[in-house]
Image 1 (cartoon, rainbow, N blue to C red):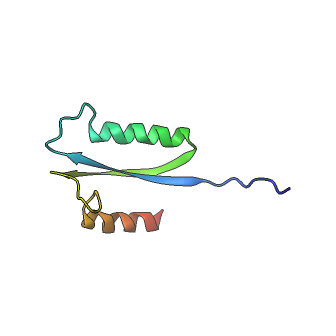
Image 2 (image 1 turned 90 degrees about the horizontal axis):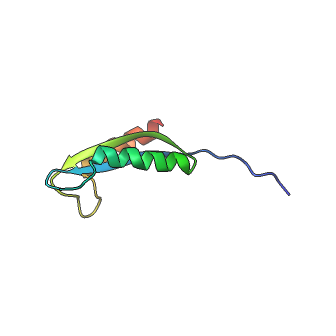
Amino acid sequence: MEPLKHVNFHAYLIGVDIKLSHQSWSAEESVIELGELCKTAGLIVKGHYIQKRNSVHTGTYIGKGVIEELRGVANKL
């Protein structure tokens, strides 16, 4: 039986700050909490990005321009 190999899983967290939302937590607080949960699960959080929008994009949640920007960030990680 082969020993298990240790694999590091990385995460880059993305949040959306909806301007007209009346949430009890801010987008920043939510991303920080998500980061803590990721660490507890053994993931290495490499960073985060919060996009401010009036509403979420129905097809991609975040805008297409941000997707391209984050693709570049991911390729550098």
